[in-house]
Image 1: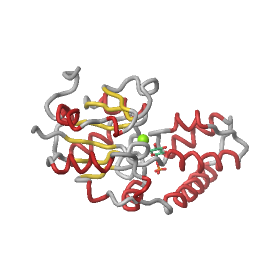
Image 2: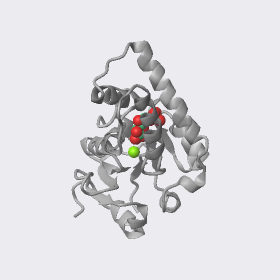
Image 3: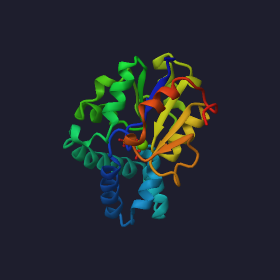
Length: 224
Ligand code: BG6
Ligand code: MG
C-alpha cells in the first residue's frame, strides 16, 4: 500500500463542536443585540475566531473598539471552553475511531489540520490525541482557511508531498484550502454545500475500507 498523508479537520469532522460554537456565539451576539441563527453559524465553520467575530459584527452593523473586540473574543472562548470541559469520548462522531485505527494499522501518516486554538484540549478530552502523528492548529498558522497554510504545515510535519495528501473537511473554506493545495478533498456533510469537494460523504459510516484503500493508490484528479 502506498503512503498517503491523511489530514483531518477537527470541528465537525472528528467531533460535533459546531453546536457548542453556535451556543457560545449566539449568547455573545445576543448580548450585544445582534441576532444569530444556524444559517449564519454554517458560514462560520472553518473560519478563525477573529474572522467569526468580524462577520457577526458586520451582520449586526456594529463596530467596536479593539479592547472591546478582544474582550468579546475572550468571553466567547470562555463560554465555549465550559462546553468543551464537559466533553468525553461519546462525542466522537460515528466511525471516526474505526477509520483512524485502520489507517494507523496500515502505517498511514495521520495529521490534524484545524483552525481551532482549542484543538489539543479537545483531542485530549475525547482521548484521541495519541492517534495523530502531527497536530497543526490555530496556534501554528497566521493565515486562515481557505488559505492552505494549515494543511501545508501538516504535510511538512508528516514529511509527505501535498499531492499525496487526503483532507477530510466539513467546511467550504476547508475544502477550498485542500483544493488550492492540490490535495484530495473529502467533504463530510451535505453535497449541496460542499460542492467543490472531490468526494462527499454524510459521515464516516459511509466511508468503506475499500474506498480508503483506493485512495492510497491514486493522486488528485485521477479517481473517478
Ligand atoms: C474551526 C471551527 O475548526 O475553528 C470554527 O469550525 C472556529 O467555527 C475555529 O471558529 C476557531 O476555533 P477556536 O476554538 O480557536 O475558537
Ligand atoms: Mg470543521
